[in-house]
Length: 69
Image 1 (cartoon, rainbow, N blue to C red):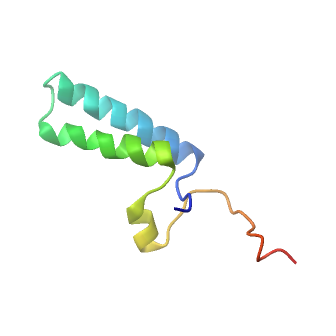
Image 2 (image 1 turned 90 degrees about the horizontal axis):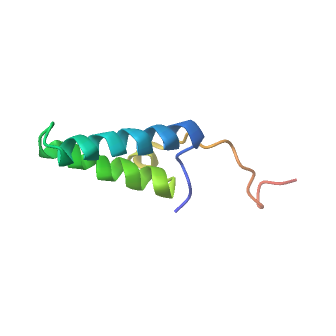
Image 3 (image 1 turned 60 degrees about the horizontal axis):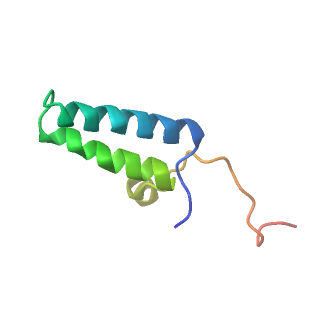
């Protein structure tokens, strides 16, 4: 898996995920709040499958060993 979730995106995913899970655990929102676990996981692993499907990335551009002159 190649990282495609960058710094600010990663932090926002983790924070929002924690808020959603906490609200679900406290019964403030429905069961959809447990979807915050997905946000926490994508933030923790810096990888989002949906981003891959659309060829999107919020990571800074990295030079691969093959693309160096």
